[in-house]
Figure 1: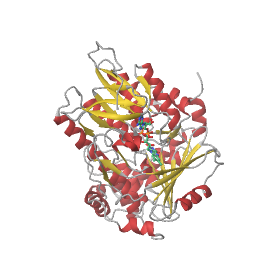
Figure 2: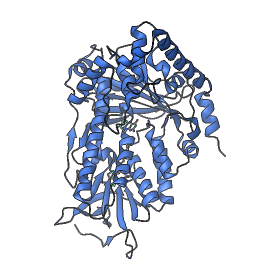
Figure 3: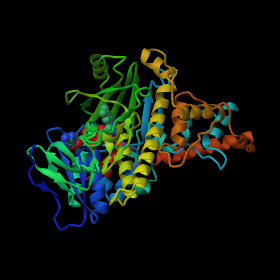
Figure 4: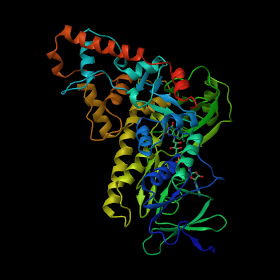
Length: 505
Ligand SMILES: Cc1cc2nc3c(=O)[nH]c(=O)nc-3n(C[C@H](O)[C@H](O)[C@H](O)COP(=O)(O)OP(=O)(O)OC[C@H]3O[C@@H](n4cnc5c(N)ncnc54)[C@H](O)[C@@H]3O)c2cc1C
């Protein structure tokens, strides 16, 4: 193949490195926005996206750390929410997971109040065992009760821990405009060839359909499931997680809203997978995640369509995927971010987070000039640990179940799980303790809410709780519950708050 002269897309005199982001989905634009805004003086940033390939177009539920990222970039939250039709998310409601008919919320809030020796669940378990208090653990969590009551608030002063439901297409568009304001060059085109340096094996340049050649120093592969650079050119495979997370298919559809948006994502388990509902300001996102070994595509779609709340406004879109992690996310001068780096199913809304976290990790591990091997190894090690921790948390939902009503649930209940997760479940069951490592994404409150929600109830509590007499423990628990009640009473209804927060200036 003949190539046109290579364009560097930067001025020839520039001493800046040229960073090329491949892909204009959420991951690509998050990366471009961060590098453009924060390191635009050190890098010329270009983003290549293919209109004909398009974006995946799902990915609408997020988790709270995204707000920190927005703050870092100086994004105005109210303006963004207005632009992308976002709503507030205080957690996820899981129905039929621990057993058919069950319902619990994994919220972003804190459970009660612990002490130096043990977390709140020890006091809660003592209350239960002594017959002093019988309320679910969620009664001691402000965000959880607010979610149940359809209330929400936001903004820095609120002190609430929240995330967003957002329109994926509008969000990518918002980040694109933001990035372009910060100097990111947008190149429309489909990459047909990737050229490697004959000696180093690093990526030299990319050829677009039509022959334009673009060279660069660093390539961020945000090309989605196709992993055009990291896999297509550098042949770095996925480590599959399908054994632990057997779902491999999804179908998504958008519907009209019915009533006010709930301030939480819904995850409703079915006999072969689960269904999501994500309420936005202008519509709802819906979908079914399922395991093709246990159900046909037709039946999964049929079940989804029978469980929609509002009228469908799009045609269903089907997805097939492999759950897993790229063996190395950073290879030579290519760093995979987003779906190109791996995929954990959307049960805990972690994909956009993992993309964001990879971008922050990369920013922290600069300089990239000569790609020191230690930086690359550190990045890859941190990525591996992060993926495995999130993977384990997701496995917990499937494995810790009483359900045995289908082959799918029998498989999940009896499957082998990672030793670290097995230990964590055992320790919690026997002692009520969560052995957290440094910098885990999901903290004690999350693990506790999900474990208890899935019927893993600690058998014992820490002896320090006995320092309180029964009356004092009762007053302590009641006081915390009343405090939550008082806090929630101050919170407006979700829809009212959106109307006020997102109104045009
Ligand atoms: C069913 C489902 C539900 C999900 N739900 C959630 C959720 O609730 N929350 C969450 O956080 N995540 C969710 N995710 C994941 C989420 O969709 C992604 O993490 C997010 O959209 C980012 O995708 P991406 O940018 O990595 O890839 P994509 O959106 O696929 O973007 C890839 C980009 O690369 C470009 N490209 C590809 N090949 C080429 C080429 N050869 N030349 C030029 N350009 C190219 C494409 O045009 C596109 O712009 C879900 C995923 C699935 C499958």
